[in-house]
Image (cartoon, rainbow, N blue to C red; front, side):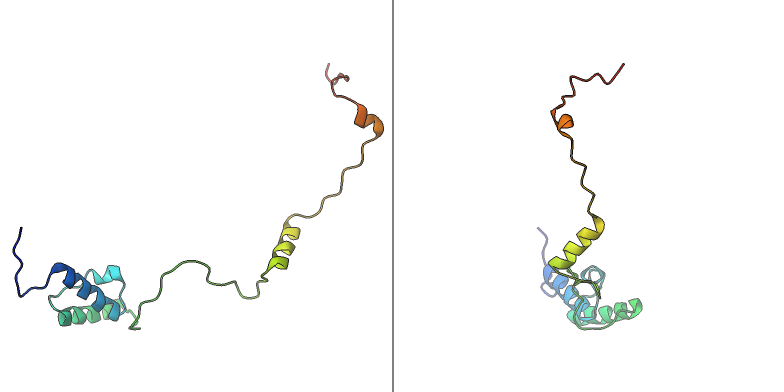
Length: 116
């Protein structure tokens, strides 16, 4: 097992400080992993310089990256009636088949010879 230098913080604490400094500068977690420094002040300075190089906007909070429905498009009808009208557009009504005569209904396909 390796000895930890008492003056140097634990790697997990340093990783957390790196992410915090990156998020405060408007960087993503992946970009924050590239920051260099041994203290929170060094990491904050590096994050600010890196964000300036990338042209990131310093918003203070990162944008959410959640998926899902972002709402309907503008002027798009919603609801059950809108869905029903779309279905009717895609599936127009067909003309019903002509009714079979009584002779056609009684006929069996096995009594007729349809091939030669």
